[in-house]
Length: 112
Image (cartoon, rainbow, N blue to C red; front, side):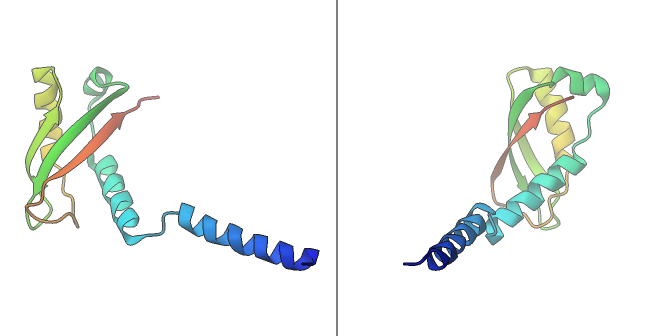
């Protein structure tokens, strides 16, 4: 095998692995859109943000046909913080999420 053929084969292998790593599947795109939607809509006041700084909270939820959150439960030990986070999450609209299907998402509250 000459060097030109070897280089061509290596380029093909690199192209295939790059496409796989890019996560170009429809499921991944839908998950990324949902994450972006939650991040854009989940707004906290500065005092609230300070309370959840550098925490990760898991939310369990369902949505209606319009994408409006119907039920939400935050996995948080502090009852006051749990209530505040559930209130904020219940105001989200998650278009494209299946109706009456349970979902879960981990929100990482990373503040600069």
